[in-house]
Length: 284
Length: 255
Image (cartoon, rainbow over all chains, first blue to last red; front, top):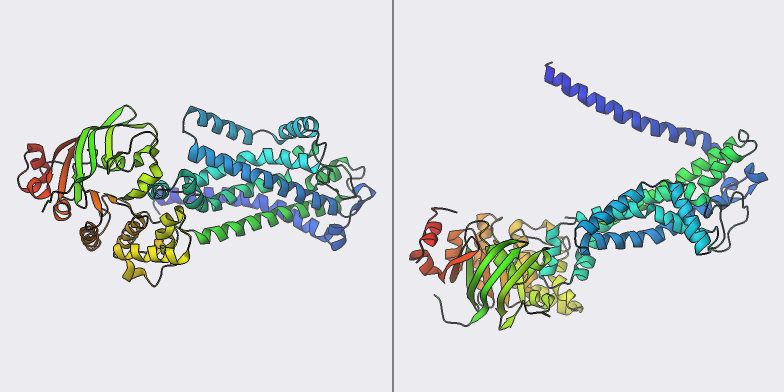
C-alpha cells in the first residue's frame, strides 16, 4: 500500500469515527430514555392528570399543553415566516437594507431562549395583558422559531431556478401570479423541512414558556387560550429539580422524557410525510 | 425574398444601461411584420439584451435603464403607464435554455391562458391542442398530455416552450438562441417550425449560427459592441455586406 492510500484511509477512518461517535452519543441518550421510560408508559399515565404534585398519576395535561403550545406556535410562525421570506427573497430590492434584516434574523436565531421568555413576559403577558396563558406561550414560542423558519424558507425560495420565474413573467404573469403559481409550489417542501426544526425546538424549550404559559402544577385542563397550561419540558424540569423527592419520581421523569421525544418524533414524521407528498407532486 | 410590408416594431435611438455600463448605443431598426429578423454578432455584443428590451424582460434586472423609443404597432412600450404584462402577452419569448415548468404537458401550455382567466376545460383543451399543433408537437404528445413535461426530450421541451408562448396569442415571437442547446435533428425541426410560424407571427431570433441565420431569416442585423453595424435583407448581408466588420464576422475571421 502506498503512502497516498494510507493517507486516504486515515482520513476516511478519522471522519468515520467522528461521525459514529456523534451518532453514538445521540443513540445512547435515546436508548437511555427508551429503556428507562418505556416501562412507565401505560394508558393511565398518558390519560390521567398528575396527583401528589407529580409523584403519582399521569401527565395528560402536560401532553395536551405541549401539543397546544407547539401547534399554536407553528400556526402563528409558519405563515409569518413564509411571508417574510417571500418578501425578502422575491420582492425586496437586494441591498444594504435587506442585508441588515438578514443579519438581524440570523442574530435572533442565536438569542438564548430565556431572553425570548422575558420578551414574551414583557410584551404578551404584561403589556397586552394576556397573562400567563397558552396564547402568550404560543406567541413567545412563535417569535423564537420565526428566524429558523424565515432562513429555511428563503433558502427554499432561492433554490427555485430563476428561469421558472422568467418563463412565467414572459407569458404575461404578474409578480404575485408568478410566485403563487410557479415558485411557491416548488419551494413548499423546503419550507416544510425548515419548519421541522422549528417544531422540535418549540416542543422542547422550557425557558420561553416558563415565564409566559406553563403552570408548575395544574391538574385541571385549560378551558381557553387565556388559561395557563402544563407542558412536558417544564413538567420534566419540575420533576427532576424541584420535586422534594426527585429520586422517587425517577420513573415519572423518564416517562415524561419518553413522551416528549415521542411527540417531537410524531410531529417530525408528519412534516416529513407532508414534504414527501409535495416533492412527489413537483419534480424538476 | 424581402417584401415591402410595414414595420411591426420600430426602434429608434435606443440606449440601454446595466447600472453605469452602457450595453446598447443608439439602436435604430425597423422589424417587419410576419418576417424573420435574425440578430447576429459575437458574444456580449448586446443582441440578447436588445431582444429582451422588446418585451421589457430586462425590467426584472435591478439597476437597468432604457432610453429611446420602441414602438410596437405604433405604441411606445417604454411610455409611462405601459401595462408590461399585457405587452409580454403580445410579445412572446422563447429562451435559450428550454424552461418547461415542472408540471404536466397540458398545464405548461395552459399556464398562460389560465393567467388571463380562461377556466373552461373545453376552451383550455382547444387552446392547448391548437398551440401544440402549431408548435409541431401535437402528434408526439397527444396521448400523454397529463405526463410531466420534464420527461420530454430537449428538442420536444423547446417546442413545448414555443407552444406555451403561442397559447397566449402573441403577435411577435422573440427567440433567444432557441436551438443552441439542441442536437442537429432537433435544430432542423425548430428551423422548419420557424419557417411555418413566419406565416402568422413576426419573429426576432438571436443566433450564433451563421448558417441558421442564413437559412431561416429574411432580415439580418449585425450587432457589434452594442451598436448595429449593418442591417439588411439576409441574402444581401451574406453575399455582399457593405461593412468590412460584417464581412469579417460572417466569414468567420473573428467572433
